[in-house]
Every structure is written in C-alpha cells, then in structure tokens.
Length: 165
Image 1 (cartoon, rainbow, N blue to C red):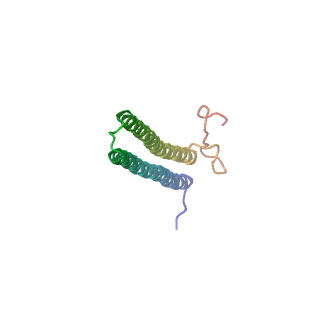
Image 2: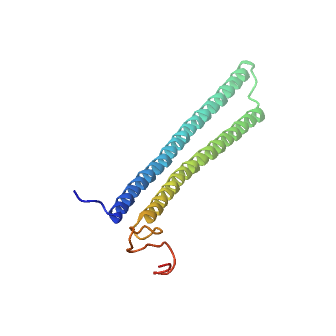
Image 3: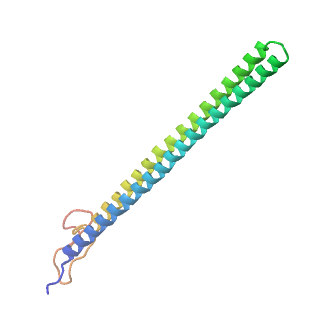
C-alpha cells in the first residue's frame, strides 16, 4: 500500500474544509430563511387581526347608530344630525388609526424578514470565507517550512523565493 504525500493530505484537508464551509454556509442561509418565514407569518397574522379589528369597529358604529336611530324614533324626535356626524367622523378616525398602526406593524415585520434573510446570507458568506481561509492555510506551498528532513524544497508563506535558504 502506498503512502499519502504531504501535498495529497493538504488537498484532502482542503476538500474537507470546503465541504464543511459549504454545509455551514447552507445552514446559515437556511436559518435566515426560517427567521424570514416566521416574520412573514407574523405579518399575515397582524394583517388578519387588524382586519378583524376594523370589522369590529364598524359593527360597533353601526350598532351605536342603530340604537341612536331607534331611540330617536321611540321618542318621536328626529336624529341629532350633529351627534351622528360626530360619531361617524370619530369612527372613521379610529379606523384610519387602526389601519395605519397595522400597516406600520406589517411593514416592520416585512423589513425584519428581509433583514433575517440578509443576515443568513452574510453568515453564509462568512462561513465560505472561513472555508477559503482554511483551504489556503492547508494548500501545499502556503505554510511555513514543512520540508522533509535531509533537505528538499522549503515552503514559505511570505518573502522572496529562496529567502532563508
């Protein structure tokens, strides 16, 4: 059986580092996607809750106006138009505030989803860069002296060729 040379071992180590970096990068990306999906789900829930809140506010306004109309009819008098208009205006303002708040919350959650994906991708790039660095350190000819005893070629990480020989 033949022996494995130093350059072959370095290539095997570099391949291992590349696979490890790839796996880490994929996991970082997937974590970002998972966080983004969770934020998107929260945004959908917030939209549904805001829609339900607006429906409830409208139902309450209609109930109040119907009650006011019925009381005016029973009492024999007409509706107080100013009071009715004030209630309608207040309800419209409440609906606008609810809508703006819900919109802002959904926007924040959408931004958080985008940031989560970006963070995952940045982590993936960092993992790949770490893998490249590890490969470069293990690549034949990139480390400080690893020559076999008795002479032979000496490898240096920096400096001019032949320096120190």
